[in-house]
Image (cartoon, rainbow, N blue to C red; front, side):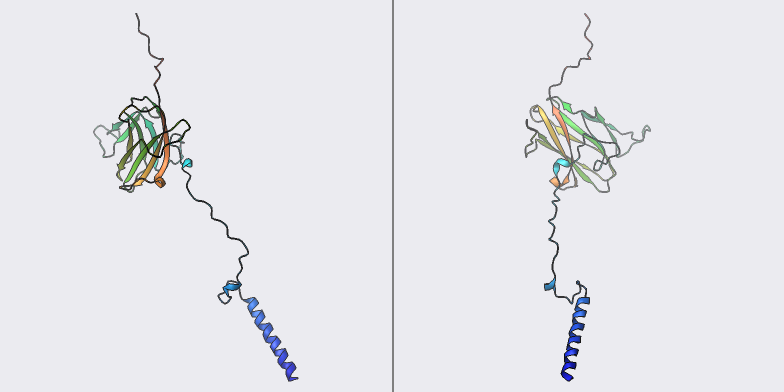
Length: 218
C-alpha cells in the first residue's frame, strides 16, 4: 500500500510540474532561451538608398505641388530687383522681390554671358545655402563626374528671394544639353549628394534668326 501510494504521489507531482510548465507563457523569463525556435526565417531588409534619377525636375512644376523649399523656381535670361515690394512708392524692404527676365527660357546662345536660376523660397527659420552644379551631357545623355561650374548663394533667415548664376566658361559655351543639380545645405556646410533636391536642364545652341522682323523698305 505504501509503495503504491508513493508511486501515485510521484505521478501526481510530475503531472503538476508538467502542467505548470505548459502554462508558462513562451515569452516568460523562466523559459530557457535554448528552447526558443524561430518559426519564420528573418526577412531581408529592403534597400533604402535614394535613387538620384527620381529627384524632382524643377523644369516641370505643378501648381499646388511642393517643390522642396521653393515657392517657385525658374530658369531665365536675367533678373530685375523690385525694391518697392509692397506696391507703395518709397516703401522699401530689406528683402526685395526678384523678377526673372524671360522666365522659362531653356535655350541659350553660345556667347550668353550667364544663365540664371531665379527662385522664391518659403520663409526660412535658419540661414541656408543654395547651390548649383552644372554638367554637359554627351551624345548618349551621360554626364561627367566633374561639373563644368558651381555657384552658391547664402540666403539669410529673413529673406525669401535669390538667384544662382551659371557663368559662361572662359570661351563660349560648348553646344549641347546641360544638366543642373540643385542643392540646399545649412550655411557653411559643404555640398554632398544627400543635399541634392532637384534638377534643371538647358541647352546651348545657335539661335535662329527671328522670322518676325519687318523687312526694310526700299
